[in-house]
Image 1 (cartoon, rainbow, N blue to C red):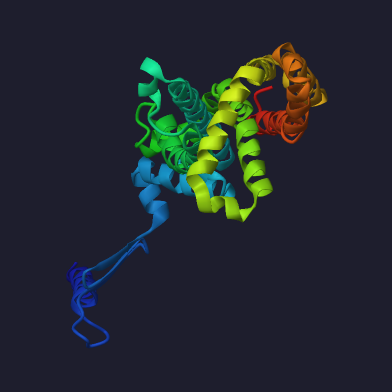
Image 2: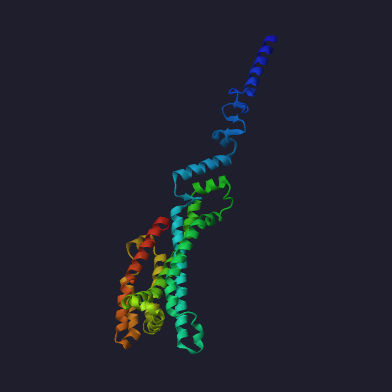
Length: 334
């Protein structure tokens, strides 16, 4: 028995010496080895991931989430980046279109102010100035809204789930595709207005903007020396446009709204095969609408409407149709 006690005591001394001894002689601290799971040197420690995952399921879930992100670089907090981009574009188009329509309303109001009398109070700024700032304002709003939405959308989607900050819950959401489905559904809901809003704004603002730019080019740079007169002359052009082809603007806006509704209601297979509204057909109806008061002015307004509309109407309808098909396919919501 005594021999056994001596051997055990000897082992204890050797273990104690391993714990207290600093092989390097640096005095940096204590080095301990226990089953190869934890190593300590001074105040530094390294945890074996395998051991930690057994002890803490949340840690294991975090490792799994990181592996999923490494496998798919397209994930942002569980929301695919492509869906985020589509949603951001749609929200930005909607807001930019809203700004364009508000700008057109300001042009109408300020034009009425030129009539004089009580309506003169409505002339806050010259109609030409209101028209000139509408386009840049809409573009600026588009850029800002798209940037903000792209960064806030993933958090908004995750806020609809309870426990999204818990690794276990987040892993479950990633693996059963719940987050992607919710994100795609949210993005799909904005399709109709994201098409109608910018198209209506363009149908109202672009024709007058084209006329304004063309007028400045035809008059030459010298006309800019008398900018006040240029603005005054074009103010009256805007007023004449409303009288002669105002109906055509309205018809084109209605066709844009109907196009957006048909796109949103159409199945993807049918939408990919054919556009619900031809751009050239929309232009034809717009020109016909301009004939109502246009015949009084020797048919000049319909010709002007046809030339102006041909510069953007067919392309606008074609572009929005192609964009709708691409976005629908990416969202995978036939």
